[in-house]
Amino acid sequence: MYYNESTVLFLDGKFTKAVDAKLDLFSQTLHYGYGVFEGIRAYQTINGTKIFKPGEHFERLRRSCSLMRIPMNYSVEELTQLSYQVLERNNLSDAYLRPLVFCSPNMSLTAPKEVSVMIAAWDWGKYFSSAALRVCISSFQRPNPKSLKVEAKACGHYVNSILATMEAKERGFDEALMLDMNGFVAEGPGANFFFEKDGTLYTPPLGNILPGITRHTVIDICRELDIPTVEKYFRPEELFEADSAFFCGTAAEITAIESIEGQAFHKPWKKSLGRVMQEAYQNIVLDKSYSDVIV
Image (cartoon, rainbow, N blue to C red):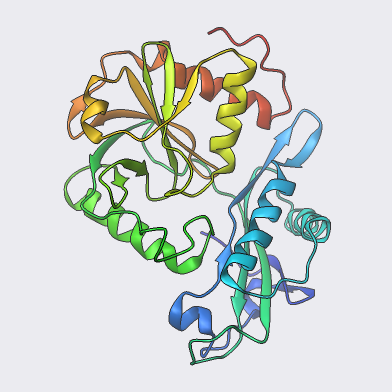
């Protein structure tokens, strides 16, 4: 699914076939999840193949390294150019890119002396198989910000996400919605969350969630289209009075939520602000104008 015998990736300063790439089994990242990564999409736009917001993504990658005290010597510009080369070498236009910074062998709980940088890409369509998701409230909370650097996109953090998604599917839902340590709605296992009420979009504030680049893009769209947006803490009970809701993220893009704990939203998705965001976001990533989007 992710590679074949001809797939090429970037690893430690050179391009190599994925089937020939090697990982030291004593890597600190493999044993402890001590590494960072990014998820980035490229699109075939009207102006050719374009990576969406590479600067923001690679700045966050470097920021994640800094927060986790992991050395990173590549600049944003270098990482961007290498990513375009990975796409070109694999003849990819619409693709998902996975930069990964993983650590050298080290069984102690100390900062690594050396790291490896990988950039891989593959053809990856919709992250969710359903156009609208049936979501449950997870029993797994997002980590306390005093226990981890929650704003870093760190490998080990996603064990929490895997557990939440698996629990949701075992309960018969498509995905989970996670709360923070104070019982406020935080985010999905791999996406940020918005809900609509009386013509306004609400989303949890930064602090207990990953600062999503797609989330920031949605807020920018709202500003351009004069759609009120409020960042605030809210309990899951408020969602049962909401008009609509959606997840957003690089992999998920803008994905409709059909129901929370079996209770459907009364506003049709086609008439929701989420649908406006979905259309505007697609126009942006494809280099089209969204000034004519009807609110």
